[in-house]
Length: 391
Ligand SMILES: [Zn+2]
Image (cartoon, rainbow, N blue to C red; front, side):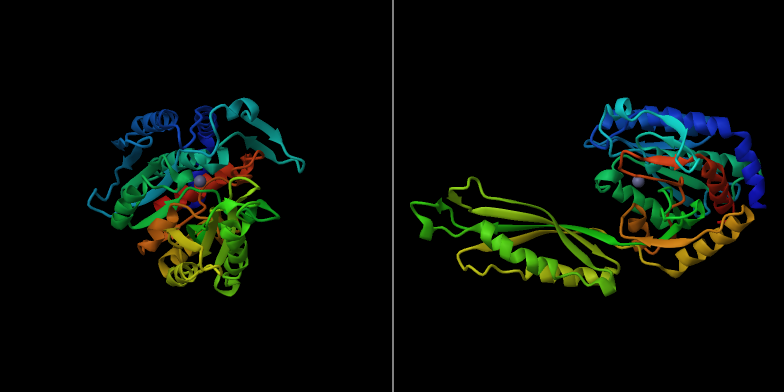
């Protein structure tokens, strides 16, 4: 089936797509507000049910539900499903919509933009997925079954949804991630699909010294703040940019008052690795940190919580297929890697072919200027449909 056929179906349903997107953006859904995220789950679930999907919702004690929408295929449900990964939580607190309302307006280059909290990351991606599935069903039907997984906690590291993502990925033929493509300068054609992402670690370096009065007992004190200051350049020297490893102390703290020799100081350290095999080396280097002052101690806690999505053969084949189908739609699809993580890191690490960045084209995720390009919405949805139909 030519990709253009899907585009025609999607164009016919453009109003439904835009209206749903506006409705979904109007339901604010910060990760930490389970009731709010569940309202967004309810809305998308209702759309899925109306389209004939079977729903499995997994209620959670500490977050909104993890939701699976199953669309049955013509080859029978014994065929390996295709897994589409979406999340319905956003980074935006309740009430953001008042200051950052839904808008449709041209930008300074005259391109029509749609803005609103979570519109790019990734409410548009979820709405696009439903329209893409509808277009495939309208033009010959789904082959293998498709499951759209809606996660409630991606923006806080996916601690609740990760086991569900991994369970479904293990059974899946391939995984499509509905995150926005990689924003690159230039034309929207540079909005690239992602075939690699770095793994992400968070570490805490905790220094313990000996407190004393800075005036009365100056020599008895052993300053944790001073020791941390000595450790920071050593931490900053750990990156290996050639291998794609970065290590960055992002937040530091310590001490209680200026007239007290500090007993405690700490740093939160962000670690990124391009290859899974590099995790142990970074971990060992951080664990090997020692204080110069023998009266002070350092403890390092934390670890790699998203494994890297490495550029593997199965994913490359998916990208090549996408590039071919994109050409039918007049899109010169590019391939990119990124230092940022997504739920695709988990599925790729299991060896399941994973293509990421299949959502809406735009810019400003997690930023006040968050917006999508309206003219890219339908072609990218058609490309997603063509990929669903051809996988
Ligand atoms: Zn996202």
